Length: 431
Image (cartoon, rainbow, N blue to C red):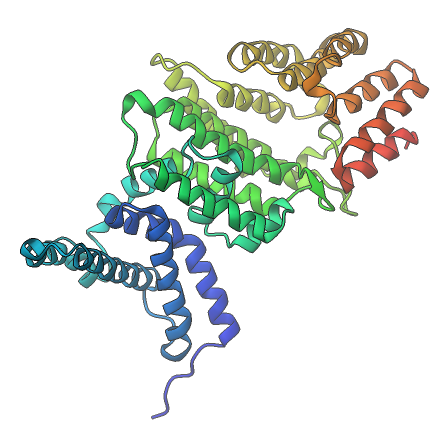
């Protein structure tokens, strides 16, 4: 009888990439629990991936690829811990140390289906999320490390997503790992007294990743849906691990509702379509329902005494748009009220500018223009292209076309996104 044919190498590599993208966070989290070192855990998990790339082309895809990778990574971890014990040269305790290591971890290695791991994997993932998003790291470092460890993205993929050189991303990841080690950040879920600020850091990272996908800051693409998808996946994981936090549910609502608009944000030629001009029939109504359900969860949690924060309030604003069957049905006065609440909990000139847009829709362009002119004095908005863009839109509605044209041209000069620049120049030309 002939040997069964092995899978096509390209198809196998695609399968490996897919498995790794799904399982990387679980594997790194489990190994980090053993080593107490996130950087080392990633290296050992990568070793398991390399082993798969070496063995599977000749042996074929195993029946349970995820279990194979997890088992291999844990074996590497045990070898690493054994070497550490040997290097410590604690002769009297050495035998005991090795026996303890084998007793603690060998059953997991033998159990290739890892039934025992299913109990702890949630805690492990939560530890990994809180570690990768630790406030001791820079914002750029937290984003890069989170996408690497929890998203399973390669350095090259992260670099492409954010349009920065690959060595820059690599340096951010290396520095982030070193910073965690130098600060002796423990691989643990913070206690109640530390959880709120740490959770805020986690939510901020996911929010930043989504925003970069939803409205790319630079480059030729209006959006980068893959980044939106990564952020949605991360926040869904977090919501499953921390189901009783209204801000987590609020961020789920915000991202799901915003992502539901992606199919309608460009036309057949790939050109941007603004919210008020979108064909709402093209919105993803499954994501809308998921987002509205998450917002309901946040509202129920708020009734238990847990107040809404900026993400739940932004989710509520997104829901106002989602519930309007047509643009003209939007409840703009309610959106203004929500922005008022948002300014109370998260004051910023950008929030104030968005509130001014809502005021323009509720009370007319002149009322909004006065607010925008006041905001124009804020140094934080001096180079922010959205301010002259909003001002240009209000001036156009007031019939002040020459002034509007100048504002749109100024906005176009400030943006680094090619699609947005083209849209603004088209508006300047009166198209």
